[in-house]
Length: 229
Length: 302
Image (cartoon, rainbow over all chains, first blue to last red; front, side):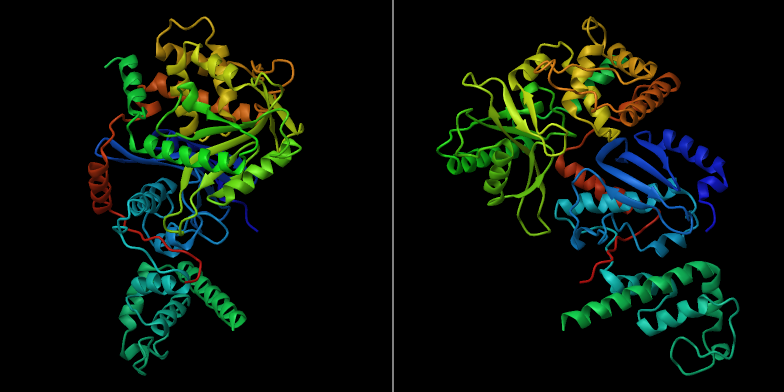
């Protein structure tokens, strides 16, 4: 296993500390083995007003930036149920990870806090007032993954989404492959240019991560369905 | 605006008015809890009172938990033989109406509503038993400590804080602690602040706060704090173990640095708060103006 990000390049950690002091002074950073934690509170500011504030623990994993940080709400305000978008093992399902990993700013933790984390809390604060989350919400489990990956590849059909992801995990796209759209044509005669464009948007490692997550979820759901019969 | 004017504004923004929605709700829940406990422990006639920040006048909007003490007479055993029995029996009684989370000495109440509406009531019930007929000193059960029981005295704690003359500093430093998510007992934090500000009552708020942080920064070892309710019996040294102290100290260092290089606003942020309608509008507007748009998910199944 390779060294964690903060040991590979300690200057990244110092930069993060400096950025946090400026942007999120109520978050303090601690290194615990291979993991880096940020603990404290995140204010939701808008037009000079503080709209809300959440107590959090952000765990930055050793393979950061290949994986998004895990966020837990520590103020006992968010219930650990699917309704409030939380993980089974605790923590907040801020977003489908690959949704963020294809963003141009995915390597910046501050951008993660400013973007997906803030979005989650904005939505949560409104949901507490029984107002729909303005940015919407994904369905739970694999359905939500299909939604997210479908948005990424531009399809709503599960088979097409999976096939696209599978091709995106390949080093080279071959023209004689079947087109993922299901037309029965060769790729070169159908959606080859679309796949090439997707390759520019979705890095191979993100497609691999998405496909792995999707398959794991499908398998788990299949097992659960079988057990409940 | 001077530093003191700003800090006064911060305090004002953290005020929970007597007619505020939050406080009214708390008072309603308190009445329900009291009724439930009185009915359940009819034979014991427990003393049920406000404890914690509500009684001490150190309540802040960002952390407005309400402690309700439920102390049983010293000669009463109908609520339980041991302190642990009392704790467990109060837990069972509350469970009829609430979702109860046990903590070291108290019982946290949440609603039993559906998952969408389930929420924290910000109420902690602290069961205990008076040590004698005078109904002053009390023993409370400790689930996670070396000693099974902890001797305390609510009135001594309340008076100690109320008479300290540094309530504003305590409220601001409580806010600071909450915002930094520093996890140690609030009453010990209050004791430390009062101790450090001895003889500094007449100083300005900014001086008082800076003094507390400076003392913490400059003390390599955790500062020893004495519990006025039981000076020789209660060992509070474990509250500030070296790990917690290091965290407290580094937070104080960062705060002092922020004040030195910037302004006090960098410590407590903006004091602008909005009413409910305006807040919802602002949240909606903030979401609409977000450049990065993401949706929450859940790895659970439907």
